[in-house]
Length: 368
View 1 (cartoon, rainbow, N blue to C red):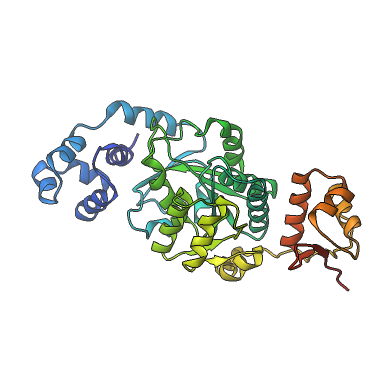
View 2 (cartoon, rainbow, N blue to C red):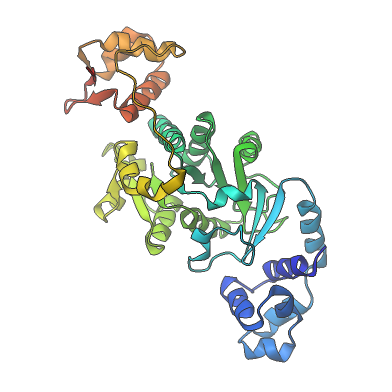
């Protein structure tokens, strides 16, 4: 293995040598190999303490060996600051990670991304919203970025995959493990149409302090962050705060005043986040940034056209007709389960095929 690769792994594994110290070393010595080969006196002159210098001079040989074994597998990559594939969006943030371990397609990291984050204890409606927004944003050309957590994160990844889009999962562990374990299957799917990335080397467990660090990468990769549901004090609000500090857009979906998972979103909106009701609310801000990667959005189908391969959607359209109906009436007449009905209604709202009136009733949009 190359001297440069070993040097970068030495830097990322050195206890107490964080992003700022690595940046100082690279600026001073010009390369990772030169930094780790520098004399103790030179390192001390840059402000490193004895423990940091010891960590560089006596690197974690076993850990580095495990990293090298992992990197030898197909689709396993290490992106470093001096790698042209390291994403420019991330390079410019405060405390940018010196390295990114990647399992999947590293070229996706340079594409325009939207982060979708939210509560692990999401409501059924929150899950459907995350899936629907992720799917439509993916269709319009964005890579969907999230944190692989239960709840909203997993739903966002799933929505992008179901739309044949691309998605990036930023992990708070080494990539030799999947956390949470329930998302192992999802992680395998993400590798096929996206990438798992982490700043943490192999063997790193899901420690509590790793998750806020992961959140700065989620927001740093993206042009904007959409918060779907969040309780006050949640990690999703940390991601939103990072996005603001990184001069990125922040979007939030409002919810019921009786839903505790909506209070974080309401707080963000009061603080200036853009209130989001449809994908167009996000697209009008971020769409122009897609440039040549912008995909043509299919013209919307007439609201009274029957989708040939979606009997549930056809049933909802048939029930609505030219009436205005509330959710209870739609449930009774369509015979659909509540989850399936809400999924169809959310998709139709995003497509502009139905509108919700001020009294909460749904009405189909009939185009000439």
